[in-house]
Image (tube, rainbow, N blue to C red):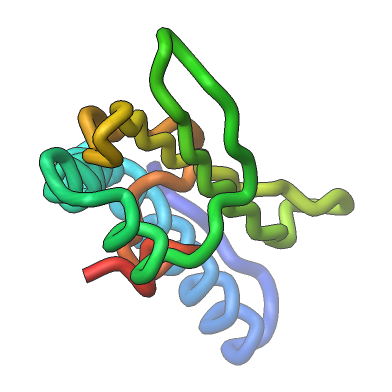
Length: 126
């Protein structure tokens, strides 16, 4: 595809920079699945460890309930980003199931922003 620019050199440079920025952003989206797998591996490391250690590192859960006879600890993360005229919210809910002995038995992440170890409470987890 050929683009013709009928504007000043400075404006052409800005447009070219915008195209590059969009291209880089799309490249990041293409790699999101790999990052999501990294995040899942990161949180799965908690399976088999005491929930007390999890809460010491991640802090108090945003939400706690009982599911399938086990305690569920849920950490929610949301970040607003500019997206046109309305903000878009990137979210991640990370859930841990804890048995009666206080041991983490499963870890699950849901949302469109579950790929950054530096996001939300995960930034505190070791």
